[in-house]
Structure formats: structure tokens, C-alpha cells
Amino acid sequence: MAYKRVLLKLSGEFLAGNGFGIAPDASRKLAREIAAAKSATGTELAVVVGAGNLWRGARQGVGMDRATADYIGMLGTIMNALALQDALEAEGLETRVQTALTITEVAEPYIRRRALRHLEKGRVVIFGGGTGNPFFSTDTAAALRALEIGADVVLMAKNKVDGVYDKDPRKHPEAHRFDRLTYMEVLSKGLEVMDPTAVTLCMEASLPIVVFDIFKPGALVQVLRGERVGTLIHS
Image (tube, rainbow, N blue to C red; front, side, top):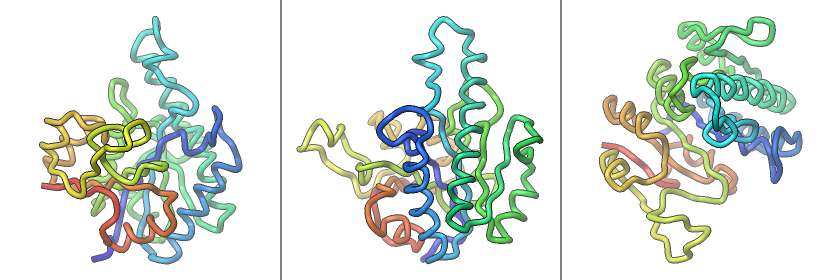
């Protein structure tokens, strides 16, 4: 069964290409995949994007106050949200950026009911600024926003990794891919799917998670149509 409304979680690295920062070519490549899938399915689509291409507090914020480092990361996600908005609109998609930190000159503040209205009108809503609080990852922001907007599923997009494996398949050719997992299996096995807090949020609400390779031809369309792609995490 096709999903009516989804939350797509993107890594900031998708916007960087093979480098660091924001690469217009990489942003356009990602936008084309999203626009084609949106056009083919009509699914209501919200997006949360990370900031790993711009700032990683655990590495670059060493010696800094943790909250300060996290706020810098939140600002990075807003920069990425604006870049993604530009790329999506170049592909003909109407978008809105909503941020957990108030920057009204460039984006709307996050207001749940307004976000729902945008989705109902067919606009892609990009959530920037994480949860607006330090000590929480953008994975947790994705789970939180998905629950708030009533999404049917959280889609964890990967690049050249088509699901969840027991070890890194890029380093271990013998790695085993899981077709299905329960939330507790993800937590107990310590699988690097998303932040444990995010997994727990999804588990408590029985919100499924699909981990897939967004650049595998046709994969995003298949996922939006409810077809079996990647790894499904559910109860």
C-alpha cells in the first residue's frame, strides 16, 4: 500500500558530493531524485536534513561547550535546508522551509498546523534547526517531526548502502543485509541505523522506518509506493 505522507531523513553529506560544504551539482542530483518520485506518486513529503557536510560537533567542537557546538550544528542544518529548497524549486517543486530556531528573514518558524497545511497543498516541507534543543541529533528531530505531522513512515536515505547490514558492507563484502528488523533488534545489536533516542521514539509510536539507497534507480518511487526496498524496521 502506498504511503500518503512520509518523512525523509537526509544526511548533510548528500549536498557535499565528494567534498565538503554544499556542492550545487550534488544538490541538484538529489533534488532530481526527490522531484521525480514526488511527481510519480503524489506522496506528501517532509524532509529533515543533517549538517555533517558543514559541522560535526563531536569532532570540530572539541573543547567547546557542548550546547554551543550543537547550536552551531543546528545553524548548519538551516543552511542545508535553504540549499535543498533552492535545488528542489529549480526542479519545479513548491517548498517551504520551517526552522526550530527563529530566523524569520529566511524561513518560517516551525508551526505544526502550518506545516500540515503546506503538506496538504502538495508542498515539500523542509525542517531545519533540528529539534531546536542541544543534545539531540537530527535523527531524533526526524522521528519527532514525523510523529508530529502524522507521517506513515520515516525514510532513512543512504548513499550506496541499500539497507541495514551487520557490518559495514563497503569494508566487509561478506556482510549480511537484513530485510526486516524489530526496533529492539536494532537497539540490542547496536546497529548504526539512527540515534537510539530516535529509534525509541519510533518504537513507542510503532512508526516504521525504512533504510534504503536513495540513488538506486527507482528506489525512492518504490519506497513511496510501499514496495519492499531496503530494510524495514518495525514492531
